[in-house]
Image (cartoon, rainbow, N blue to C red):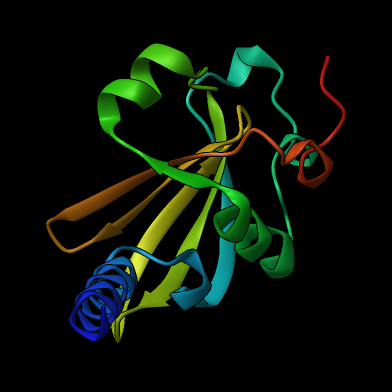
Length: 128
């Protein structure tokens, strides 16, 4: 019985270590909003359509789930307007974008992470 408990404890410990090795949005620090952009000026995007404060941008990444590019492309709207900035992750300076459709990305060198947030409506301006 004691051997089984030790094996179970080791398995749980290994799972916890493995989960810490994955991306943790709480580990995004120094989230800085730089500027607003739109890919389609005629689309009538407004700055209020995206999070404009450093705190709201950080909140987006803490609530959003990481998704792969296919899921982002197939399941979410790629809005033409976005806000961008920088953040620190794992000691590296990275660039990020948050789009009006509650999607985002973080680019750290060659690595790119994609995010979608289904519970972030309060961080964005009024939807039409």
